Amino acid sequence: MGRQVRVGLLGPLEVAVDGQQLLVTAPGQRALLAALAVRTGWVDAAELAGQPWDKRPSNPRAALQNAVLRLRRALGVEQVQSGPAGYQLVAEVDVRRFQELCDQDAVDAALELWRGEPLVDCGSDVLRRACGPALTERYLGAIERRADVSRPAEVLAQLQELAARHPLRESLWARLIVVLEQLGRRDEALAAYEAVRAHLADQLGADPSEELREAHRRLSELPAGDDGLSAVRRGGGLAVVYGEGKTTLVRRWAQQQSFPDGEIRLDLQGSGAGCSDLLRAVGVTEIPERLEEQSALFRTVTAGRRMLVLLDNARDAEQVRPLLPGRGPMVVVTSRAPIQGLQVREGAVAIRAGG
Image 1 (cartoon, rainbow, N blue to C red):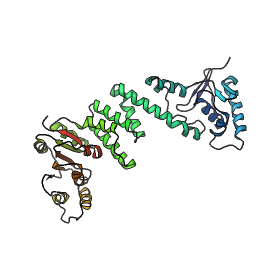
Image 2 (image 1 turned 45 degrees about the vertical axis):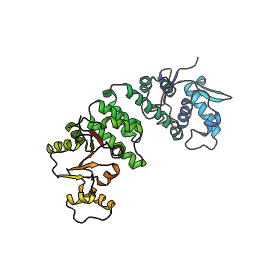
Image 3 (image 1 turned 180 degrees about the vertical axis):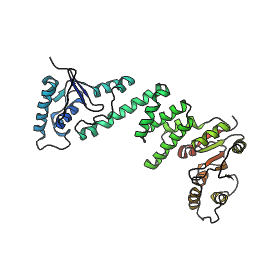
C-alpha cells in the first residue's frame, strides 16, 4: 500500500509522508519534486532532464535518474511512478488543489492554502520563474474576487499590502480605492488614486485603465458645496467645480478658509489671460517669452506654497494644464463641464455646484 504524501509549494517547500514532516535538502531532489508537483499527470522525461536544473549537469539524463532514485527512497516507489510517458508524482499537492478551487470559484478555500511566494525555495530558479508568476496572478485574481464580495474592513489591510507590492496592477488599486470609499476614507482613496496614476505615468507613460477611472469616478462626484471642496483640500488636490453657481460656491468657501501664502484668481473666459498673469501675481517680474518656460517657472516658484489658485471659467483641459502650479497649492477650476481629461490625467475631483 502506498504512502500518503503531501507537498506544499505555495510558500516554503513542505513535504510530509504519512503525517511526518520530511526534510528534502538536496537541490536536485527539491527541483525534481517541484517539477513533478506543479503538474497533474505524466511529465515527459526529456522535459524533466532539461528544465529544473539551474546549472545544467554534464549528463542531464543520468542526473534525472539519480534524483528520481533518491526521491523514491524518500517518498516511496509508488509515489514517483515511471512509464513510457515519463514520470508522475502521486501526492496531495497544494498547487493542484489551489488551481481546482480557483476554477470552482471557491475563493476563501483557495486562499487558505496560500502561505507566501510560490516555489520560493524549490531548488530551481528556472522553475520558479516559469511557474511562479502564473500562480501569483491566480492568487491576486482570487484576492480581487474576495474583495468584491467581502465586507470592506475584512479586506482593507490585505489590499493595501498587495497594492504596495504590485504598484502596476490597476485592478488591485481599483478595489482598494472602492474599499476605502466604502469605509468613508475618501481622502485616502483620492491619495491612492493619485499615487497609482502618477506611478503609471512615470513607469509606463500611460493613463489609468477604464476600471481604475471608474473607481475614481465614484469618488469624483463629491457632495456639492463646501464639504466637497474641503475634502479635496485634505486630499491635497485639484478640483473642478461645474454647474450653476460654481464661482459663487468657490468664493464663499474660500472666504471661510485660511491660505497662509495667499490666493490667486484668473478668469480664463474671453481674454488672453494666461501663465504670465499668474507669474506676475506671485511676484515674478522677468517673464519668459515661451509658454513652456512660463509654465515651468510657475511650477517652480509655487511648489510647496500653501495657497489657493482659482482658474475661473475654464474651457478644457488643454487650457488649464499649462497653468497648474507645483505641488503644494490647492487648485480649483470652474467650468461648465467636469473636464474629464483633468480627472483622468491629473487626478482632479469633480464637484457639481447647485446640489
